[in-house]
Amino acid sequence: MRYLGNKTKLIPFILGEVERLIDRPGTACDPFAGTASVAAALKRSGWAVHSGDLLSASYALQVARVQLDRTPRFDRGLLPSGVANGARSVSYRDLLAWLSAQTKPGFVSEHYTLAGAEGRAHGRMYFSPSNGGRIDAIRDLIQGWESQGRITRSQGQLLRATLIEAADRVANTTGVYASFVKTLQPNAARTLELKPIRPTPRPRGSGRSRAFRGDAAALLEKVGTIDLVYLDPPYNSRQYPGYYHIPELLAVGWSDPPRIRGKTGLIPDEALRSDWCRKSEAEGAFREVLEASDGRHVLLSYNDEGLLQEQQIEAALRERGIADTYRVVDRPYKRYRADADGPARTYARDDVKERLYYIRCR
Image (cartoon, rainbow, N blue to C red; front, side, top):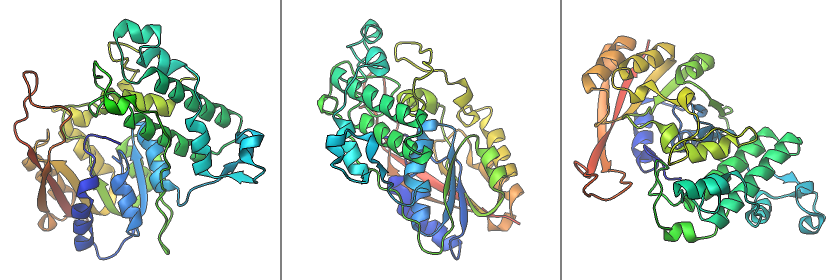
């Protein structure tokens, strides 16, 4: 999934520092998990990971990639009798193939495509009408199966995550949902297809990994004493609920239809907004998280264009841990571009630096 701040390309850099600083894997907490790429990489390396995030879309991805150790099978009764072919259960892949062919226009078609009155009124072209109908049908089926107790909670989250990623591949955007493109792009003209997400197997000897949804400080207090606290918070003023309101909508569903607003159809998100995205509040948010954490090692991943200044980060970490263990390393990488330079947007530079700040705690 296209996601601001995604660390997939930086995983070798991050894991290399973790392995150099910490002698062996233990228990880690990643309370700003996003797409769960780092949490899954830590689990793959032998860590038991507690991952978390404020967004329900992130929680679905965490369950799929971090909490699940293997791909589940599903009740054969979910499929029509002729499709199930008498099997005792249905594979994830076969279920996705059947789901991908379902269509029934509903909430997404009405509000986020030109097929619906609300979509036409605002010119919303987040999806083609045909893909909007597929998204509606699939999400409604997931909701119905859950309410009837026909799938487990983790199965439901896996299917949500699969739909979120499939919808993102055909979304008529430049990578974020803060706006839509005014003409249908080639990717958005393709037919939505659900593709399997592969859960991360649990290495032999490692503990269970779990996913959470909620505030970072609250999660850190809940997990208690651990070996590694990995922090990857928002670093600029972009509030993620506004940039990813449609993935969040797909995660939450519309059994209780939200009151959407504005040209882009934003959903209510005040409770999901982060102090890390407010310059006047970011340092306080950082110190609150450090106070709540009880980890032997703290590793902060932060962009060199972030709201927090390096001096603020250093001061807070030295106060929290053993001062002479403080260190910082950085790695340049290509900036994520949602659009090209133009009259309305000019990027200062193409390369930015990801910095890893480290402190060992008492």
